[in-house]
Image (cartoon, rainbow, N blue to C red; front, side, top):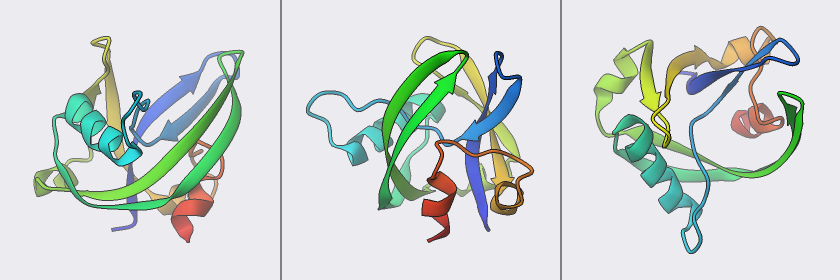
Length: 128
């Protein structure tokens, strides 16, 4: 329904809110699709299906005053449990035990510049 599941982030140096899809780092010897399945299980205890690769985004960024570089493999997928689509927001959990909030946000809010989606270039890839 033209929504994307994202976590809200905040850069305290820039005073800037941003949103990014959930995911995680690829472990040695692990394929990116396998990483996606594992990370979704670990972070929100969910299973996904109909996984399709959309493309790759390379991103140079600054977060909380530190420079970063990431190569992001972007996938589209569906939840097996359809009740995830009925929630406006819910919590996820990181490896370190910290809790983060996930939101379903309309793509139009990013397209209209009301909200910022990262990594840079992701919105263009999704629109294709």
